Image (cartoon, rainbow, N blue to C red; front, side):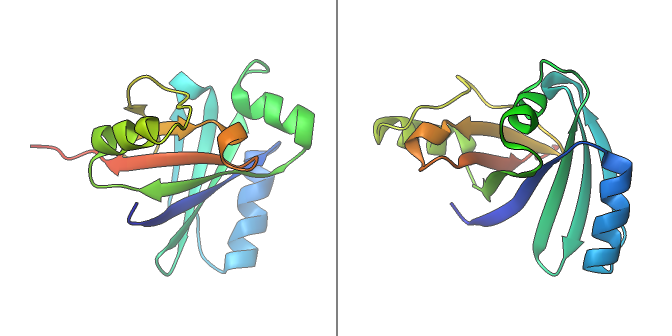
Length: 135
């Protein structure tokens, strides 16, 4: 794992949260994106080398909606950038971690992603992600 790629924060109201984080970070949201497969709208901020991803559920059945219902708004996941997501998934599997995806899937911000079950990581949902390279 190369670095923390971003921290994901679950929010109820994306537009209100964008306003909050623009003021807090003193920078504009650089991207919003619907991730239909995950039933979320996302907004991204960058400050230095660090990124924040805000996530708002688009369905009451989504993982983010269930997270907010159970825990309230707040940190949803920590994402780590990897060079080879398939190799990293295999390594984590061999180490005994439960992966929530059998194969990587398209995530936001031009990434392929896979999640590690939080029961194996002290209650923290971990995302591994790899930049999609276009040939």
